[in-house]
Image 1 (cartoon, helix red, strand yellow):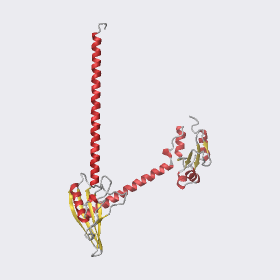
Image 2: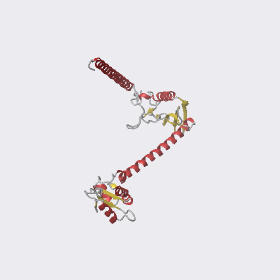
Image 3: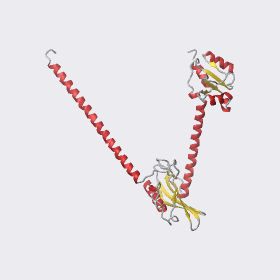
Image 4: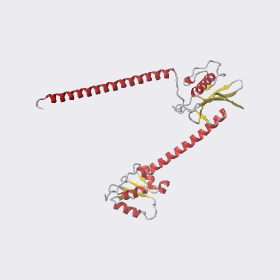
Length: 312
């Protein structure tokens, strides 16, 4: 098609190198039926921009970004490829904005990978301090990525100093995963760790040791951490406190009596629905088989009648 740029009003911004002067570009656009506009305006359909003008945001680019946000700002390759293929190509893969967003996304992914790597190394170092093994890392809840690395704190009023425990479940780096649980006590001038579930433990044993220690130090169960009971007067000195992460942060799966009842109801409803669906499918299959059998018998009877017909 000769005039494939007939609906295109194209602005250019920047220097595109030897043999690609504004006059030459204008000639190419007009030969394809398009129009070259000197400034970006309401009728502009495309802005062809150089890398340098995009980087330093030349006047036309600033104008387009601020006043005419729907006008695509594309690389020179869009114009070249469109001329070579003799049609106005879609702008998505040539868009500077989308390319910049893609670059930012890649940078965020790389940053996230770096942070995850640093976090993993730190986690292994902590396991080495508590278990004397760097082949373990802090276990994360698979449901909400909560780290089982919690702090229990209290104020020793007699000695006027804060005390804390760091209670942690560790998971082996290698699969199949094995587990361990440790608690590190800290106060001013002292720190020591105790292993509650040894390395190479299965998860139920490690999680059980975690919950037992938590209840012994706080006075309530791990499952009740979202709504802990009020402490009795005078018990603040002996019991430690656990603070839930702020809303929006992973908190681990919260399980209490109401949650157990809700889960049981939902599970029963799901089973009932699955059973009803299975019965419906079996009924439909039986009805279909019955209809097929009736058709087969009718067809057989028709054949018998045709065979008995003396005119046949």
